[in-house]
Length: 211
Image (cartoon, rainbow, N blue to C red; front, side, top):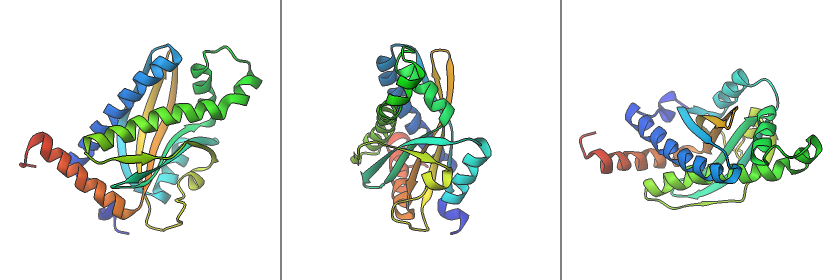
């Protein structure tokens, strides 16, 4: 696979980052209602990389175990969306979501349920916003919590070798806690090509044909 196959032009990258930031802003509003405290989310950077490169990016930044909420999406483009946290951050997130009222055992007992609910809010907000603004419907599966290293998280179910990862760094700030995480969208090359076409169409609708 050549590197050009997964490149986004600067304007495409800017448009995609804006789409995702609108989505996570909506997710923040929903989370704010759920946890009854201030929630800020932002996506400062977007990368489109191969699955081995995504694994390397995670390994460079996170040395401990990871936990992710995964949802499949289908439509004009398809793949798998992941909301990924270092495991110690996931417990902090659950504690925020549950209002700091549970002991360690109780937190452990409901961790997957709370993560699923949070992941469902964030991923659905991001994907639904992208789908609406790109004027293409997407269907989402139920959330699934998975644990493991990046190589496992970024493995597509079909086992194909040409999968790529749309890798989004995301900053959570809930109350007084800083919780870092990542959003990743795993797609094959045809889905990425379709997404790029839809982004170009979106840009033209917004700024006209002179792009």
